[in-house]
Amino acid sequence: MTLTELRYIVALRETGHFRKAAEQCNVSQPTLSIAVKKLEEELGVPLFERSRHKVSATPVGERIIAQARTVLQESHNLISLAEAGKDPLGSVLAVGAIYTVGPYLFPRLVTRLQKLAPQMPLYIDESYTANLRGKLASGQLDAIFVALPFTEPDVVTRGVYEEPFV
Image 1: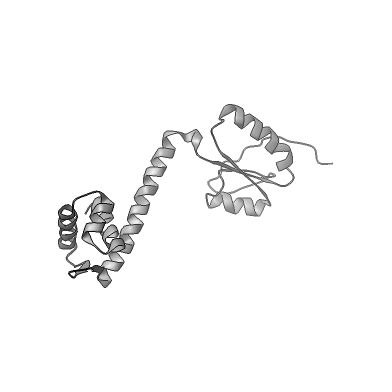
Image 2: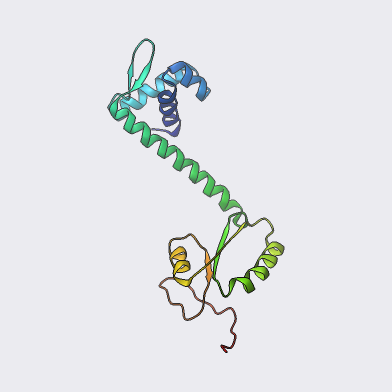
């Protein structure tokens, strides 16, 4: 089974006609028909009911086509990840800080980041430590600035600056 075959069955389900699906996929109608038949044989189930005027998905075909859509979307996501990996400075840097630190840190951070990596998008989140901890753990934030002590498994902690408490 190929991504191309999955594209064909999704197009056939959307259009309801072999000719229209072939046009949408920029292939000949026989090419699309053969590929769909091959996929049905590989899976061992009919995906479509064919009549003279319309093609409709079988119940199992509907489920397989829904999964095919997911697979196609995920393949697109893989391509996007690979593209982003070609330029690591082009992906978003998501940074969080507690409310008391943000107003002092972010103006300097933004200015410096614009000089060092002008193409890097920056996402800033100001919140409470507990909220920032959760977002860091879930991958929504790449780094957080909070008051020490901050102990979290698998998180590297570094002191950035120290000021007296008065």
